[in-house]
Length: 64
Image 1 (cartoon, rainbow, N blue to C red):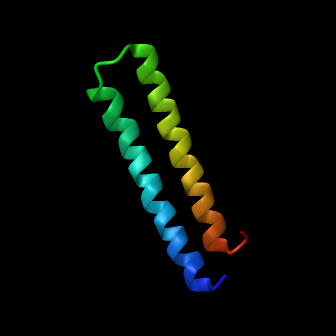
Image 2 (image 1 turned 120 degrees about the horizontal axis):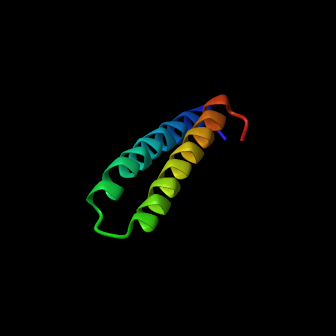
């Protein structure tokens, strides 16, 4: 792949990560679900955000 595509894809995953972290803060606080379900939503959002950051790092590095 071209270096430009690595950079563009990395930027996309950075934005996705920011969205997941925002969702981790907004969704559990506005949801009327049970506390247990809110915990799992929060945990999933944080893990998805971390995953997107890691993918972004590898694309920026050009390793994938």
